[in-house]
Amino acid sequence: MDIYEDARTVSRADLAAWLRQLASQLETTGQVFYGAAGAIAVADQVRCELEIEQEDQDEFSIEIEFSWVNPKAATATDAPGVRKAEAATEEPESAEDTTGE
Image 1 (spheres, rainbow, N blue to C red):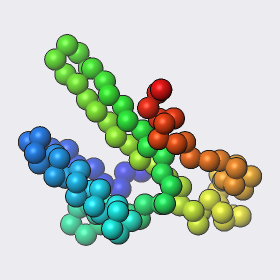
Image 2 (cartoon, one colour):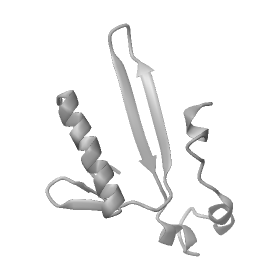
Image 3 (cartoon, rainbow, N blue to C red):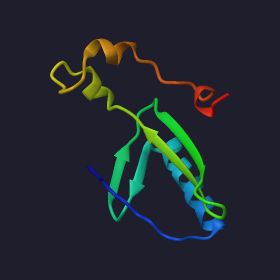
């Protein structure tokens, strides 16, 4: 289920400014703001993925993905599809683990 999706062409400087704004939002509010009036809270611990691909000889892509589980949902005994033992023992990977080194 998509909550929000946006795709556009921007300058490198505008992309950098957007990434700084996103980082500032995460640091100061713990939320990511999107669209006209939407926001989503980000957990204290997140899984991060960075994927760099060469699509063909002249096209490249970088995908940055953050994912997390709502801590309230992970600890609820009646949360569908969540087993308490897994939620309690699963530890997030460190930044070193996601670099492929």
